[in-house]
Length: 360
Ligand SMILES: *[C@@H]1O[C@H](CO)[C@@H](O)[C@H](O)[C@H]1NC(C)=O
Ligand SMILES: *[C@@H]1O[C@H](CO)[C@@H](O)[C@H](O)[C@H]1NC(C)=O
Image 1 (cartoon, rainbow, N blue to C red):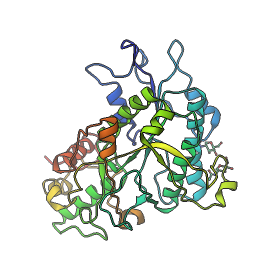
Image 2 (image 1 turned 180 degrees about the horizontal axis):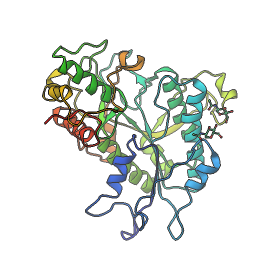
Image 3 (image 1 turned 30 degrees about the vertical axis):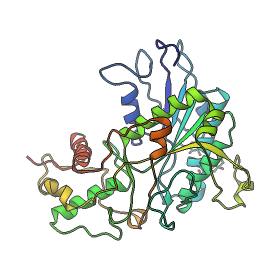
Image 4 (image 1 turned 120 degrees about the vertical axis):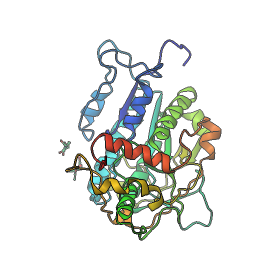
């Protein structure tokens, strides 16, 4: 940012239950100096478009009249449900990112930050944590297509791509994912005054987590970082090979999928908490136990569910090392620990929006 008066404009792709809300709040804080100049009126434009349609993606990049073109693109898209067919996974994860990535490259966007969910299994390796250099295996069909999406984006040469590979995200308004179910289920055990039982138990296996404020903060730090380098220089400083983990037959079937033997490199950073996850257990939720008993007002509808699907019930080991993002990008975690206080913040926001039982 050579001209300090000119602040970058940004587009965030991804629903409100992703990290988009936290990033928007960071870019356009309610008070204090704005990090990114936004539309004067309204400051933030919210749009719903069908991102599987190329023309809709292209028009999202058109700035409102009288405003400069966008500088940064944050891609938080992708299907997160494991029960979707492979066809849907391809359409809503791979194809959506492909359309956004191609358009961003065409418009010479300065930064394209792709958030990669932790759909990997690191349990078969002997090491405790895994750096960006190590080959880790994507988990399930969902993980395979999220990973393939990285190869496809890496193959777009002119794309100023940075990949941020995160731990299990949690935070205010994040009502999905295994951390949210973990907190909810744990509270039920707490209410029943029984020790938490589960096929897998957080804390026993390494399960990296990350607060959504840190996903937002690191996304912005990475955007600024690559904007100053450009892709080629960023590749030479922080490029990692994205190794093929798909079925070779798919290359012919799926439009835009790079050949299996194409060597693809992109800047990649792990992002997760410094500490291993503490147990999500009755100790943390003890204080909330009573709330479930007699909520006032009652909670007829809540997106929070104590139901754990097959994915949530299966054992996960996700253990990455986060030294690189600290060293190369200089990012410092705002919430380095997953503890009582951070869980309380999440639950307090759920209470505010009326999705969590409240006691007097
Ligand atoms: C989005 O567009 C695709 C392709 O045209 C279509 O199949 C799908 O139904 C649309 N989705 C929504 C939610 O409108
Ligand atoms: C996926 O996309 C293809 C090609 O655009 C389309 O023919 C197909 O109906 C889509 N399938 C689903 C399940 O969305």
